[in-house]
Length: 262
Image (cartoon, rainbow, N blue to C red; front, side, top):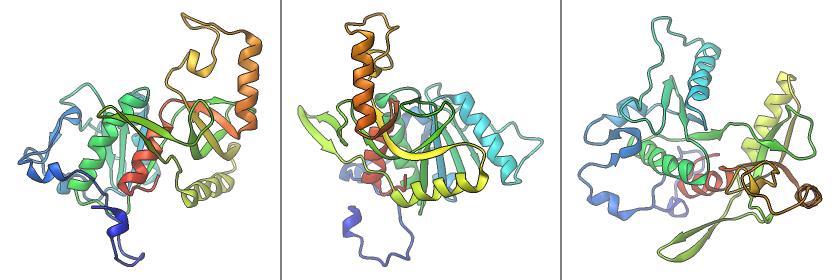
């Protein structure tokens, strides 16, 4: 189903969309890397109340995050160790407290893309509506004080263009990388009210590599000088880039395709 084909009033709930007619022919949709499936688990019962999904690279960070959220929501369970819902696999980790789901995604575009495919299908099968997804994690800042939080308004590639490219069946497909502007403004306002750390809204550059792709000088290979590095980072800063990481482009593209607010 395509979001543009949905004629319901804006006040109605917004579902999670999948764009794959082949799924209808599956007797059991196996979410392999989550060790979950429609034939083995009651996904609506397990996840139907989810309204917020927070994703990040490290399994340990995402467990710490769900423990923090449980305390913030006064939903701590002293008898619970917040079990990993994906304990049947070592690919990703998933934790849940109330309407909040916390999921690890590993490092880089390929890893988070696999996770997002299965997460979107999970939310779809669970009949979730009005879901907000936020990626949280460390990044390299450009022109900012250390510790500054960057709320991404748009993901750009290593040439500073707002696009995500993927080769499908030998053809390059280009997808939009805009993120939800109202959500960005809400997060910025929350930061102002907390008044605990500097927060800015800006563009995030998504690279394919931690070393050469981010102009680092300490990788196994390096064909450029310190001056080359500084010139490149200055150009990134002039293009409105505030920080660098390795997942935002596909995150933005897949949120937009599925109707998730991210």
